[in-house]
Amino acid sequence: MTTAGPPAPIGPPHPSPSPGREGCEACPDPDEGENAVRTTHPELLHTLRDRDLTTAKEILAGVTVDEAVTILREAPATERVLAYRLLDKRTAAEVFDLLTGPEEVDLLTAMTTSEATAVLESLDPDDQARLLDEAPAGVAKRLLAALPESDRRRVGVLLSYPADSAGRLANPRYLALRPDTDAARALEEVRDSRLGPEDLTTVFVIDGERHYLGLVTVAELVRAAPGTLLGTLARLPDIAVTTTADAAAASRLLQLRDLGALPVIDSERRLVGALTYDDAMDALEDDASETMYRKAGLGDPTHAKELLRSERLTRGGILYPVRVRIAFLMVTLAGGLMVGGLIERFEDVLAAVVAVAIFVPLIMDMGGNVGTQSTTIFARGLALGHIDPKVFGRQLFREVRVGATMALILAGIGGTVAYLWQGAPNDIPLLGLAVGLSLFTSVTLATFLGFALPWLLFRIGLDHAPGADPFITTIKDFTGLAVYFSLTAWLLGVG
Image 1 (tube, rainbow, N blue to C red):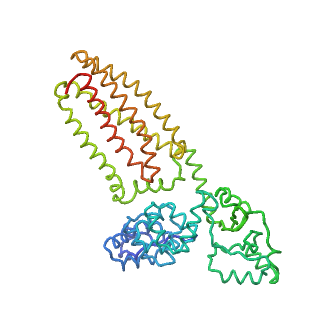
Image 2 (image 1 turned 180 degrees about the horizontal axis):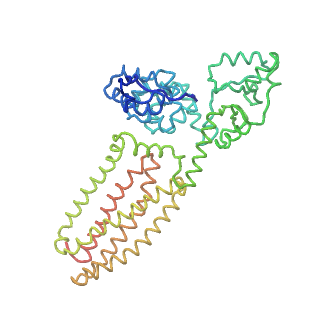
Image 3 (image 1 turned 135 degrees about the horizontal axis):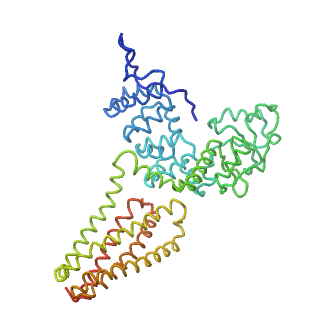
């Protein structure tokens, strides 16, 4: 984590005030860095939109890491990628580390495959696994295929562990030495290691079969006599977590013991990775956020893909939401044309009994409203953890029972009104029966579809938020009207 000083102004300095003026209202105070970022940000965006990359690079060369993060968060997708490309390599790595998970995924998604792969290769395997797990399936598959074989193998092992487990967070890159290694040799290994500073706080001690025996901090190695063996210095042989242990619980253990890294072992106590302090703090933050959101009733942040989809649908450029939503609305367009064909097929019924047309909007709208209710209840229940997509049959059956009960009530009321209003006065008493049966069918089917379709879309990896309602509307309208017109034609002997 990089700690930056107060934000500095972005871009070239403004000219000094002309004589006789106390200052320029449009010019920021050079001592007020935060105000300077807000004022000069449009200038940078203007150069990026005009593809004046030379000027943009000069401006970005003078910004701090925190300012660069702010710029990337505020810039549109295309300009965001351009700005990131223009950062020097070291700054870019620090900036990427400060972005949130969804922001990192968004940036990788907007990059070319080679650019995104270069960013991924600079990360630890546990961070690679996290980003690939959060990315859309197509993007993750593309990036995983572009990684070197060794990285793919490590990431594959990490992704095989359960979500929110210590194994998923464990970094397979660590320094482990035998107990007969002396302190002087161990320090040489530390100096020669390519691991980053955050991964070199601790040296693990293992035997010839990689069984975990204890740990030694680098500070303890420095203080030890050069000839002291690690087997003598090693401590905390029982402080380790298994790959299947809860990540938050493992992070609390690391925090409680005030360690820089915690050994992660398999069922046979072989060392497989290290849970570092920075990853542990991220796990604790996610766990705290999950608890807070659950108590507030705001949703379940463990569904990383759902969070990413929601953010992309509600923020940033319009291309993604238009592309996602129009694809599902094409279903409604096709369904509407099919419903039109159905009405044309029963035009003789409508011509013979004009009263039949009066109840068409009732059947269509009632089913649509009930279906929307069901999809909303499903979405909220899924977000709050009240619906488990893996065990769904009982919840679906309950919703259908609720729908059938409502359908009986609505069918009874609607059929009675249809009989009294149009059936009896026009000598077509069976019209009330046709309306009632059609309402019962439409409402029951809508509740079933309102739960079943979002669940199906969720299970196959599609976004159920914009996708469920178009399917429900199309199927429900066609089925409800088909039942209504067929019953009317049969019961009234028309058509």
